[in-house]
Image (cartoon, rainbow, N blue to C red; front, top):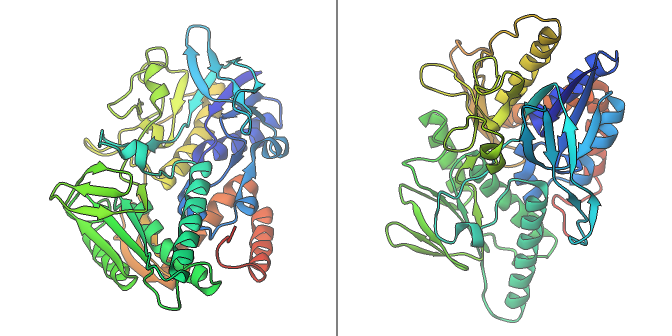
Length: 435
């Protein structure tokens, strides 16, 4: 059978593997394999909720091995470290024991392919800022989000203990990057503070024990969205007592201080970096594949690599032409659209037909500002006029995006059951995870 290998189980990769498995794997017309360095999947736009403790990862993550069994593809646990294009072979690195890093669970392996699809996503771009990588916490993966959650909880507990001893000790949190991740995380931290105060884990009965500062190097937050969305978001962040600073780039991150270009020194118990992305460095080392300056694979409108027609790429790791000199933006909706395109393109390729060209449609963006509010713009099509939305209606729309992703990978029935189970579970649990 034709061997289709998808590397990366993010929003686009997992959806594509599921669709191809149900269509081609079930009927034995192709052998579909999904490769990922992690054993479970969680929708990356939700990592800020994991970090604040408002999302239970055990409920929302998907085990790749079980999902593969149910959808007729194979899961291979490992990280891509090499590629031999002439032999159509991938090299996967060894998988170490998480609790005992010196012990090897799976050795390095070779994996053969006929069609290779790279969906490796993105990782944090530190832009060479002094001390950023060493002293700031990032939100690229589930383990990083869990690490941040534990750090936040422990810092709040320590602060509360010092306060009980008569020593005032507010918690200072600095978020670097005014894009969607930074803004959403800032709003979620206010929710976390309120729940911790309710359960006597942090602070007194008065709000404001947690100081949250959001820093953006550019002239405004959410630069990819229209100015009216930025203005509405800024107003809501001020209502949440979040200090927003724009036009003053960070030049250094120290252990307990963030330094900006203007000379401002901002105290910080926890520094979070959400200022930019780049594709994984391994892409620049894969047997001569053409990449751009942030390691994204250069692809044609067919999503095929400019260097090899047997290799495709989608999502954040692909640099795909859109309009004029603009590239398709690194968004979840782009990965979803590309997964649907490749689902049909791969089938056409197996029939010996042309794969066609990918056309991206921008349906707008929504930014979550807590459990009951969101803001953004939506559009029924890329040509239609955008509609500004905010408040509870926008929050319902934001939640629907995640449900749409679940329906795409797990089916409508499982998604509906999951909604009911999650709603019942929340009746008997605190608003954030307290341990």
